[in-house]
Length: 442
Image (cartoon, rainbow, N blue to C red; front, top):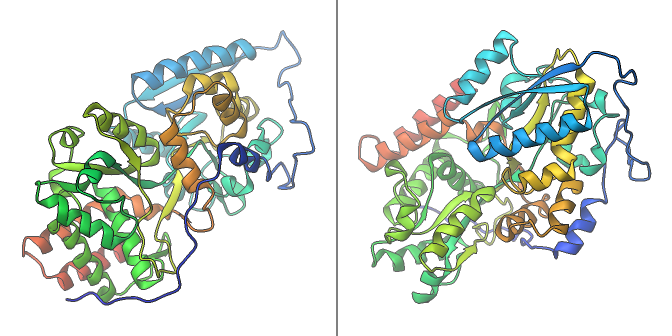
């Protein structure tokens, strides 16, 4: 099937503000206990235990991550205890592989930790009505909400209940080796046509433009679909806004991305080594991972450059989405919610801990933590540039619908794209299968 052209008005362009002005904007909006502006008020600091003879309180904290995250987190827990001797934090950490399965089991059994690091899409899964986690609005005297904008907190709000607070924001964005692009007289692509042209030129050297995982591939295809049809693919987590005929266009386009060397075949996966061995020019990755891939490009004496959000110039929908990297939540029946809230506030807003964590969980949203990193020169430039690119375009980049990053949905989409490429299904059959799967999933 042929793809038709879509002529619409151009949407606003993306831009990056200077760091100093960016920091000023961070403090323009705030929300407090009542949702009102509290910038004119000093942060409320209550001492949970005025009686020094009172017994110590025990709370638990769970997270996932590598050894480095564990090391600085344990140091942070020691610091928190030195500041709050009556509160003992018991840590529970694990690697990401299999973590959600363990979390789900503990959540269903009611044995999950008092304070939890969670993924954004877990809110709709574990708290669809807003009652799955503690309402943090009721603990506002222990948490410095003034460090966040009201729009930041909306990401964790369900039915008016603040279930979780985002740590940092994330979006998917390309990172290219500009040295290779320059050698081939190519500019950094900003439109789909430029992206396909770059693929055509680089293909002569056996190189694909971008490597990416299943989730990133699905998000890339969603961006094109929404720009092309000028509408959202998902209206919410339970409503698909596309017919099987429209989805067919998406499968044809997805196959083009792979066949024409824009995307290194996702079914093979990719490794950072592919940047070195000449198979890839760049990577389509989460913003908070941009520095990692930039380092790989520098190791081969290339110049890493942050790409643009690819667009159809006439589109009325941007097609791009933003989500929290991860979030902090408190157990709904936590026995010591005030102490748990104090620890959440420490994790988010304590400047000494921010210097321990730095950008490991992304560039922090908290104005206080961000200020600490800026003052000590700890902001990694590419990650910071990524944050600036997405944070100040909130009117253009949409809030991610959790089903978009559902691992099963991502895999079923890729499987059907692969079946279409391999001739096992027509584009129409792949689209109908995916449509029926989504309806059953929702």
